[in-house]
Length: 601
Image (cartoon, rainbow, N blue to C red; front, side):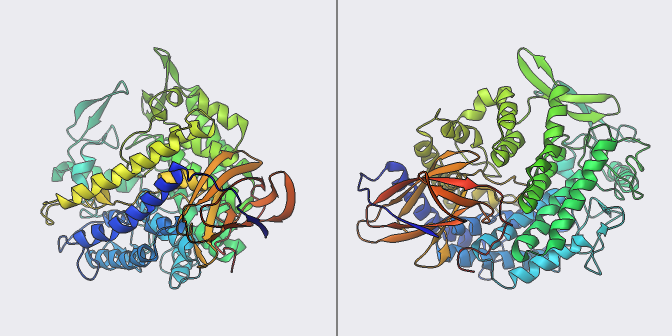
């Protein structure tokens, strides 16, 4: 690989010191958080019984970004603790009944996606670790048809056989107990079908101009009617949400390079692309057991589980399509797979209407047609632009009114997905917010302090807290570090993989992440190059960094500061004490099969 040596001795920039301060603070805070809420064996200090199929995802989410933080530059202790607590969550929720064979026995892929990101990040932390590799292949086999017990996949029809799947296979009939812990939450959502013989009440949805009917799921008689309809109409269908499973299979490919996994991802996504073509360009939300759209819905292409009608609408259509298209593009190098979610974005924008100069688009489709008109979140359009670096995607993104408003502000806090700052970072890359590095690092440090205050002042009864309690206090945040150092956004939260311009390795310690004392800042980014600065803040120690093109070495460096180099995924940079270096590297994108192997394997 090409080697560079830093020579510049300039005042240490504030962003570099703040990066190191944030990393040090989270290294110190994370173990305190874990000790506060767990027993000696790592299990949560919580109730002895947790019935139903919901909840394990929230256990995993409480630590989900710890191995990612280690791969950015967090401590070895964080890496070791992340594995300890993954095993502890798995054991605890196995005892509750949700986990079987170290994977959710059965649930939907919104929640599987939330659970799995913790596990995917172990590939970035240590790709050679066992039993992680064996687990990854076993988990993938639940969906490729290779596992004898979990026959979730219909290879002939290229479909997943139910919206509720897992290590026990497809679940065609939900029991009365399956939703037991979730019924109060579902009572605030629209009733799944308009024709159910249950009492409902009308509720106006702020900001959408829509009035929806909701039913009381906590009433046993009402719940029994809803459950029967869900089982009869939805549980033998494939749904778009299942496309999030492509990340699980892509993870297996990135670990092994076995082409059977790549073929499965592409085949499944293309099956959904065909369904979209057959449905006049709109993604249907249900495909029946014979492969026909609307087969169990009286011919309706809407009304499926987590589909156009119930409960969230467009969000749970566009998100899995985006995740799967990004996975296919990563595995094949063919960015035209992004046309699949692009098409849905364009259709929904075309269906929009201007109200007081603001574009509102329909988010739900019911028996009465398109409804729930409200602003389109730019999140998925932004992810597509980031991956493609295509001017057409930039224009689509900037056409959304939200991109000109509050989406651009550095908000306090972090959100569940730690992904609320794409907008101001996008402006920084375009030269419109030059102070963004300082502001996001300040905001994320303040959030560490706020969460540690919550932990110190937490007197809640462990027997009554809900499963979100711990994740709302996790003091580890990675969005700012990913954006600034790696030149990429946070993942698509419900099961996406990491897509960034750069990764780093400590050459002396032969581990992933920035070496101690080193700060990194991506200053420019386009489809042909990336500009970045590395700073060694130490007055004593020399550090050596290996810079990788892409999260999985899927890109290659082709030049440094205008001078051609041997095409390689890696650059070696030596940083004497107090020195810095600014580099502009030419890149060839998506030219390598993605791999976790790193520079030494």
